[in-house]
Structures are given as structure tokens and as C-alpha cells.
Amino acid sequence: MKKIEHIGIAVKDIEASNEVFNKLFGEPHYKTEAVESEGVKTSFFQVGPNKIELLEATKEDSPIAKFIAKKGEGIHHIAFDVEDIESEIKRLKDEGFIVLNETPKKGADNKLVAFLHPKTTNGVLIELCQEIANKE
Ligand code: ZN
Image (tube, rainbow, N blue to C red; front, side):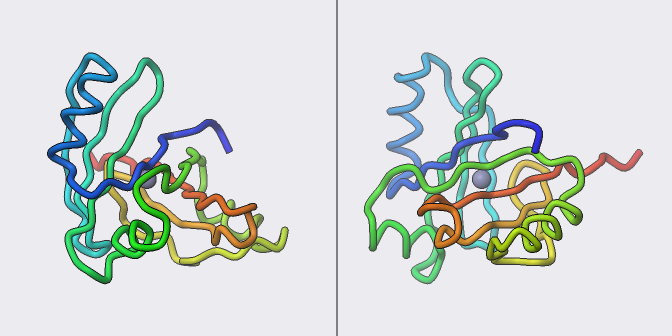
């Protein structure tokens, strides 16, 4: 793994939270994106070299809705940048981690993503993400 790519925070109302984090960082989010397949709306903030992703559920059975119902708002996942997501998935499976989606899926922010079950990572949901190469 190369570095922390971003930290994901589950929120109930992304518009209201955008204002809160705008005040906190002194700068507004630089993009918003809906990921239909996951039932989420996201916004991204750049803080120096780091990124923060806010996530709001857009449907009741979205993983974010379930998370908030169970635990309330707060840090939802930590995402790590990887060079080759397929080989990382294989490596981590061999190490005994439970990979939630063994086939990487398209996530927000032009990334291929896969998640590790928090059961095998001390309660922390881990996201692996690999930048999708821009086709020229
Ligand atoms: Zn994320």
C-alpha cells in the first residue's frame, strides 16, 4: 500500500456537513459525486496532501444508511492507495482478511475499489483504491 488515499465520514445531511467542513478547513469541497450502485452521494475536500470524503445515503438499504442506523455519524472507512488492486486483494486474502468484493468495483473519484470486512481489521472498514488510468 502506498499511502492513505482518503478518510470517509458518514453523514446524515451532506449539504449541512459540507458547510461544517468548509468552515473547518477554510475551503469548500472540490467535487461531489453520486455512486448509484452504492446508494451514496459523496463530496471531497482537499486538506493539504490529504482528502476527506463525506458520504450520505441516497436509499434506505445503502451501506451508509445501515452504518448510521447502527453507529451514528462518524468515521466510516480509511482508504489506501494501491498500485495493483487485483494483486493486493489476492495478497490480503492469503493473509486471512475477508475481502467484501473480490472483484474491484467502480467507486467515486475515478477509482477501482474493494473493501475489507471490519471483522478482520479490528473494527475498521478498509477501502483499497487504485486510480483508473485515463484512456487517451
Ligand atoms: Zn472512500
